[in-house]
Image 1 (cartoon, helix red, strand yellow):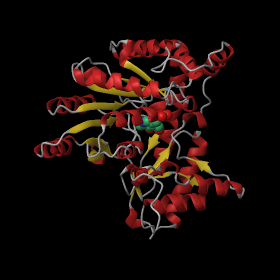
Image 2 (cartoon, helix red, strand yellow; image 1 turned 30 degrees about the vertical axis):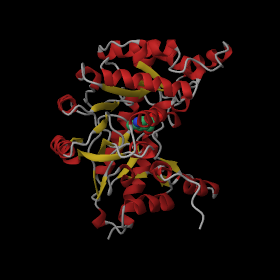
Image 3 (cartoon, rainbow, N blue to C red; image 1 turned 135 degrees about the horizontal axis):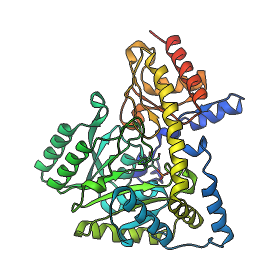
Image 4 (cartoon, rainbow, N blue to C red; image 1 turned 135 degrees about the vertical axis):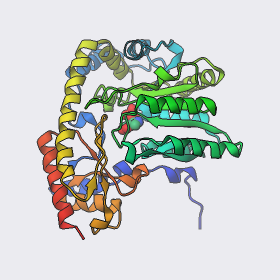
Length: 408
Ligand code: PLP
């Protein structure tokens, strides 16, 4: 037998979010109308705002079509610095900001820059699907903390402290720890106090703390968002964010990493991330100018984003009402992002697991969702709450019918 041409680590490269895409496409080819509630893509349902499209076109017309500054055009870097100053009272310098082709690229750079084979990072389940993949891609491994479903999916701080202490007792290092706020897939906005405790833990155990805040503007129902940057002053940390969600511009592929501190770890990291950017030359040039312009156009942006958030809140509300009628589910109400993550009482249904549940749901009702096990949380499934209210309500009614048809 000849050895595989593939690397060992490529085995981990897989996306549960997109695993049913081909099957859904097949159904569409048969003429079925499949409703996609699996992709966290606001631009599928909320057209990217016109002023952002216009700014993109303007960048093209003005000849912004070459490679650009590898770590990001200064117009965007300055706009990001101003965004963090005005929203969170943080002050940053140009070197603290690194623009990437989405947070997805930032995660790849970060793990490549930090992880040696055998190194460990801490992630919390349910996790965003790319985190474990990006760690494993570079030979690293992860320890799993958890968000606590019985406490509105906030961080299980005791479990996290134990996990870290146990690891530290072996005198092995934890390279970094990443949290997601607001969370994908639970939609939880983490309480400030929980964040404070995580920051303290990271400080006590000298762990670099990363906070993925890509949904920071999508918060509703009285929830209040705190950036880790507000709490981690003087402590090595980094923040991941981008244009995909708050600027409704997923296909632009603009993300950024902020490394606001100047300690040795932070300095090493930001300089190395800049090297990664130089190696891949630049991210999308006209898109950077368009997002810079959108960030600077605060009035227009504020108006657009609040309309979108209000609409999302309405969609979530109507979906939650119908989900609560379903005896097979229990669902923590989200306070941000655009995800709903019901727990499925598997004993009441004739499926063996959440994977079968979402597959048969797609096959029979033409509704595409994502299995919870893909996020490290079996017996759950993720619904993306972006489709218009009536479409969403129709889908949840069908999901409720589906559960009745398949009850044990
Ligand atoms: N981080 C989280 C928590 C996400 O949910 C997503 C996309 O869904 C990403 C990162 C990737 O974002 P980007 O489009 O910036 O690559």
